Image 1 (cartoon, rainbow, N blue to C red):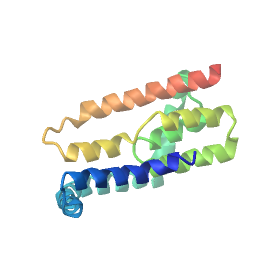
Image 2: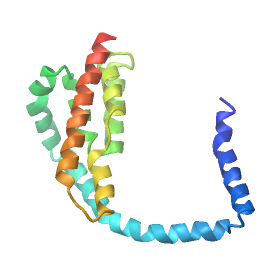
Image 3: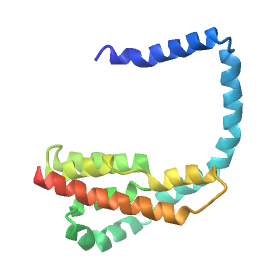
Length: 170
């Protein structure tokens, strides 16, 4: 394990050596890259701010709890425990929010419980769909967000159902 900690520093040293051999001014190249990132950050910021605000409003307004209760029978039909539905709803919106929900599940039910195992698999097999969508689609001209979002959400739900099935089998 000690050797794995050397990978990143060695990678940086390797980049500097290659840059020196090729006579690239590393600091100038770095600052040029940063200059190119600033317009991208300015372009992405409104999308990210909207996602963060809507996520917080969704949770604090109680809509999240109502949606969990409404969807519980459908999720349970596919073998997803009621206790992790909130995680599945929060995960597409917020990575940090889903981390908090996941931590709460593990603390409540124990790390070795069936529910915590299902939560771990669901947490690891999905992505913050709306965050990634906001970042990606803010940078491209073609904005067909609906189809890509629907496919990503359906894939996440299928992964959750399959993950819970595997947790039950194993």
